[in-house]
Length: 156
Image 1 (cartoon, rainbow, N blue to C red):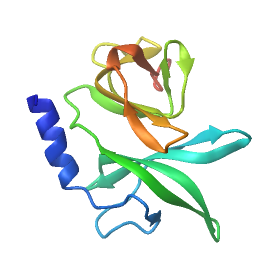
Image 2: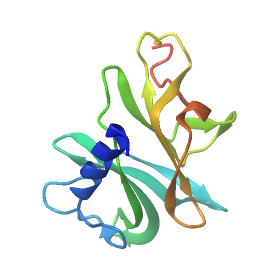
Image 3: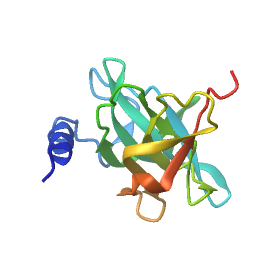
């Protein structure tokens, strides 16, 4: 097992057991600060990919299926979760802005490298990329070399 895979496995072991739970609420000390809808058929937000954050940083990504509403707040059943590798300098987590083989897919999440690339419309994925498989509700690993994500700050 590579050092990268070992570090990711150790990080995953520290995550709360959420598979099958309906959120919010999240366990004490945890929150979700970012997420994107993933369409399925006619339902534009049947599924979602969201972050699971602690101390202001994404520790994991969540695969979610719509579970209903609690007043004006959406509720989600967690179908999978995966630890997010610690970003290196210049890297950031991209959700909902990625494409593979030239086709946009809001179910892709990746670490992207913006180092020296402020003038580029897209940034390459590095080290880590996942895609939400809609049929199973689980994340599947992607070759980061096949993924690029929109530079949301391009032109600003």
